[in-house]
Amino acid sequence: MPPYVRVLLLLLCLVPIAQCSKHRSRKKRWSAPAETHKPGAPLSRKVVDGTKSRQVKTSHLLSIDEHDFTMRPAFAGPAVPVGVDVQVESLDSISEVDMDFTMTLYLRHYWKDERLAFPSSTNKSMTFDGRLVKKIWVPDVFFVHSKRSFIHDTTTDNIMLRVFPDGHVLYSLRVTVTAACNMDFSRFPLDSQTCTLELESCHPMFLPLLEESIPYSHFRPFCKVNYHLSCAFLSWISNLPITSSSPLFPAPTCPLKSAPMTSLSLLDAYTDEDLMLYWKSGDESLSTDDRISLSQFLIQKFHTTSRLAFYSSTGWYNRLYINFTLRRHIFFFLLQTYFPATLMVMLSWVSFWIDRRAVPARVSLGITTVLTMSTIITGVNASMPRVSYIKAVDIYLWVSFVFVFLSVLEYAAVNYLTTVKDGKDRKMREKVRQQSQTLPCTCGMSHTKTMMLDGTYSEADTNSLAGYTRASMAAEDASEKQERMVVHLSMDNESTGTKKKGIRSFRIIQNTHAIDTYSRMIFPGSYILFNLIYWCVYC
Image (cartoon, rainbow, N blue to C red; front, side, top):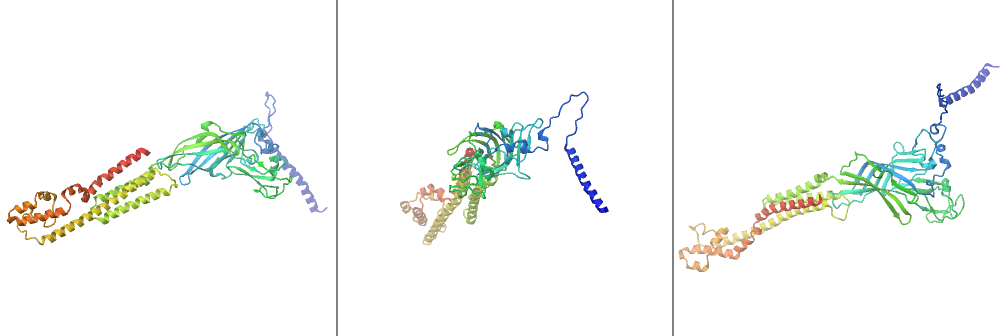
């Protein structure tokens, strides 16, 4: 026999021996160590825990393949009590424009399903990930009025399922939900808002069904169930057609039995007769992190409530409420809205101390304050929803705007009266100047007697001339003829102008300095009174 043939035969004999040795070592590695018997101790047989055995599959241990988990526990029996508790991880944001809030929480469900009971003597429970959730029955809880929601999946799906030997189940998942919150902004920004996150069993959906009653479990091999966080829906696989007479579905043929379809009520949701939601530990079912904080709000309290919700087409459902009250921080709005508006109003008062003839200074100051107030009002409303009622901040800003606008109107009135008075004085001086040219020389006359030649006089001078009449002037000496002519001229000018009584009655209107003087007291006093009333009402 050639040598290479002998070597080949030797290798063929060594291969089975090596395989046998490898199998023995592996069996020895996974076998339990031999228990040594101590002298004097009674002989006892060790009970093997099935949950610790590597050779038992989860599906076999929980008997998943032996039961139909498309039905709820105790089907056709009493309602299944499902306890719920929530741990709020964070309150991410509050949006006034969208009127919603975003919250991240741990949602936990507790119920008992005897179909998941398993024998165990030492292990208290078994914990699984989200893959087992797709194989068993779980409550169909969803968030009412939710806009967006998702289950976290980094680094894997944040789902935990814990099964106890007696069939009790703990189902926990980490969820971020954005839900609507009806807010009242009538006292904004001195308001408090109460938002609610509502949990409820999903409403049942009605789809066509075959005329012959076929259990829902028979449809499971031909259907795929897509689960969302809020609800579950069923979609038919396109390559398995089913005959339908409904206009909502195409008209394929059923692979089990060709028959027209009438109605199907999917048991993916349960009324209070089938599923009873409740807070597992009352008010203690809701726990929060003490470090939760918001930039604009102070979280005052969290509390839970529950009640029944009625839908005319489906029935009564248990609904759980997570209520939390938020009070807005006012300091931000004091710095960004109230203080600037107050400063603009105070700045508009500066024009009362500026000379009334400084038209560019007073006009530019008034226009600047008006435009600044308009900008503040626009900025506040841009970050708020377009509500149809008046907010507290609107009252303050618009009253401040009115004060600023009135200061501009005040200068307009002062400037108009100043212009009218200057025009009258100018006409009077021109008239006196023209009449003085026809009078004889008044050289040597005293200052009091020549007071009207330049067209200027005081009220005291006018009072000193009140007793002069034409008759008295004719009875005087001829040497004082020139003086009588001057006095007569002054009385004629007074009779054609404003009377002495009219001057006293409308002194404030004609004296523009008096308007500014009164404005310096009226405007600040009125604004201070408004602030006292405003803060007493809204604080």
